[in-house]
Image 1: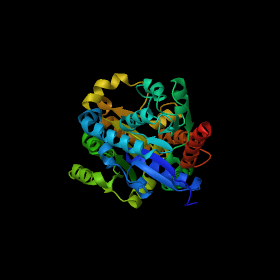
Image 2: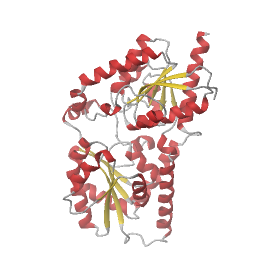
Image 3: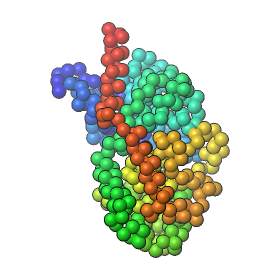
Image 4: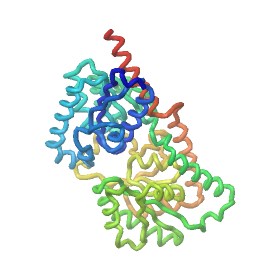
Length: 402
C-alpha cells in the first residue's frame, strides 16, 4: 500500500449487526483492492469499528423492530439522522455506501444527495420493494446511483419497478466458512440416512428452536414455542430441543424457558452453536434471514411469526406472496409459514414431525434447499464484487469530471 497516496474517503452507514458485518467485509475488500489508505466516516458496530471506523453514535440505537417501536423512536431517529448527515457532508467523501435499515439510511442518503449532488451513493442490500411499498424503487433513483443486491431475484423486480441499476453480488452467508462446514456435515448425514447406513428414525433427534434476535420477538413467540415442544415431546420420545441464541438476549431466553417441561438447552458461544447446527435434524424459526441460513446449511425448517398491532393494520399493503427467503429464491413454496392466527402449535409440531425423520417431505425440502444454494452462488466472494462496483462508480465519476 502506498501510504503517501491520497486516502480513499468512504462514508458508510449501517444500522444492524448484519449490515455491520457486510460493511466490514466491504471495507476489507476495498483495502485489498486499493493501493492507498481508506479513511472512514459513518455509523457502524463492532465489525466496522475494528476496521477503523469511529461511529458517529452507538448503532445499537437503530435496532428497532416492529412499526410500533419505530413510531415511538422517531424523535431520537431524527436527531441521529441530522448528526450523521452533518458528519458525512463535512467529510466530503469519495462515495457514500448505505447498508440496509432503510428507515434510517435512506433518509441520510436523500439529504446528503441534496447537499453533495455529485457524490456517488451506493445502496448495499436492496429495500424489500418486492414485498411492500413498491413505489420506493422508483423514488430511490433520486438519491441512489447503484444497488448491490444480496438476493438473486431482486434484479428483475427492481428493473420492472423502475429502480436504480442493480448488481447481484451474493449473500455473505453463501460463502461463510462456518456455514459451509455445517452444510458439509449435514450433507454427510443426509447421504448416510438415504443410503441406510444409520439406524434412522429411532436415533435421538435434535430440533432447533430459533425465536428471533430481539427481545420483542422472543416474548411474543415463546408461549407458542413452548407448546410446540411439549406436543413434539409427547409424540416423539427421542427428541431433544436446543436454542442457539445471542449473548444479549440469552438471559431473556433462559428466563422464558426456565419452567419448560422439555428442558431445552440454550447455547450461546459460536462453537456450541455451530455444533448444534451441524447435528440438528429440523428447526422451528422466527421468520427472517435465519431461514436462509438454515436452507444453506441443509436443515429442514418451518417459519413462524406474530406481527405487532400496527403491523397488523398495515398488512394489506404487503404485496409479497411469501415472507420466507428460501421461497422467494426458489420461486415456489419450500418452507411452510405460520403467522398470527395460523400459528397453531399442534399443526407446527406435526409438520416438524414429518421433517425430522427420513420422510418424503424431508427429502423434498432438502432437494429444494439444493436449488436455493445453487441460485445463490456467485463467481467470486460477495465483498469483492461489491468493492468492484463501488470503485467502478467512483472512477466513472472522476473520469466524467476530469
